[in-house]
Length: 226
Image (cartoon, rainbow, N blue to C red; front, side):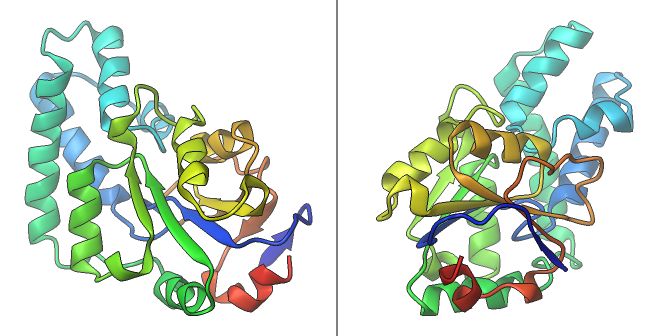
């Protein structure tokens, strides 16, 4: 099901989020975080954890450091969580692309719609995903949130993505699955499609121009007619 909320201008560049939109790494991230939380002897509820969706690992640990008075340095916290994540990522056999997204990416690329990645994930995680699933050839740029001082919902990453695109900003569209990601696109004044991801729970996508529940419902021809 695809619900059109507002009809935007013609789209020639798609800016993809990664986690929950291209690949379902959210369960692996959650596993790594909660293993680390146990090591740190802190209790983080699922409700509180859900507010971190779309934020960089660095920002998450800054919030946790302030809340729990953690003594460890932010960089050390990030590196430990990343180590746990990398071990799980490399050994987890049931890691798949989101249903329908590979066909969508290929269709967009073949029909001359420019693709840019703008993810809160680290460069290392982005490269792991793109190398594992052979996605590099389809994307003009890959942008990591670790290069920005503030994470989504701050709009900086999407403003940067739009500036790197070959399109005017009004001809760009973001695809996001999180409250923070949708708000970042809205704050950047870039049209946004909210994807209802199975693993991104309790996310408010109401500010999106579109809501998509199945990538099989959209293709390049449809997007070009928007």
